[in-house]
Image (cartoon, rainbow, N blue to C red):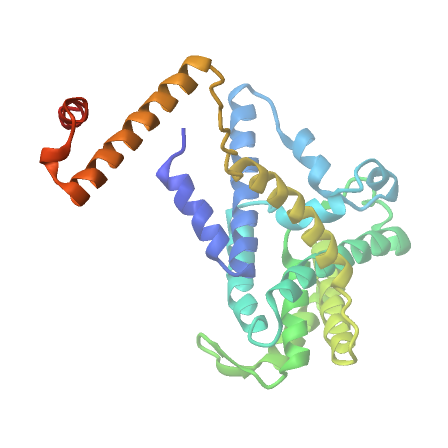
Length: 300
């Protein structure tokens, strides 16, 4: 049974632009993960061993067992503040991004930035000795790398776009992007080093995309082609479900029906002939049989 609330949410998702849909997906994933954690906790168990399969591990060995995590991690968040902060950034800078690029570009940059951020995270943890003790136990979640890609792409395309910040006043977009990147560089060895490394990967991906697009090359084309193909599979299923049933005409081959129809037609023809005779020669010239036929027809 369908519920109006779910129908409304579904309708808002379909009518929303790309960053609204991405926010819906992130919030939906967060709610499912949170409810799963609560359910397991009620039975004194921890859902972490299930959710970790969707987090991006720093270890290449672990990654080989869960390659899908390079995609799933960018839709997962650690807590309510984590997702709230990221979704606010996605809402603000997603709308700015769409003033210069298309919705498909936004979808592609989100995924492309997340992939590049995740790859840089794994590379850094496996290359630099500083992370050697943590590589096997570290993993990452969050949309930050994807969002930084959106920010830097917009900043490259329109560096002087004015951004109004509380207490700080109006700031040009290029300076905001530079400040964010500088802070990530300063905190590369902090407790959240993996997150800051991923931010840098996402920021570089955004710059790479915008610079390439200005030269006529779309780095997100393959991503959008894949998602267009994937979504078309569901569209075909939906169209099949909504396909109108074909009308079937049943023909009754009973000979009695043919005889009945033939008799009715003969009677109708006879009445028409009698009416024509009345027009030509008058009622008084009808025979008794013709008058009886006309009388019987008038009673039906």
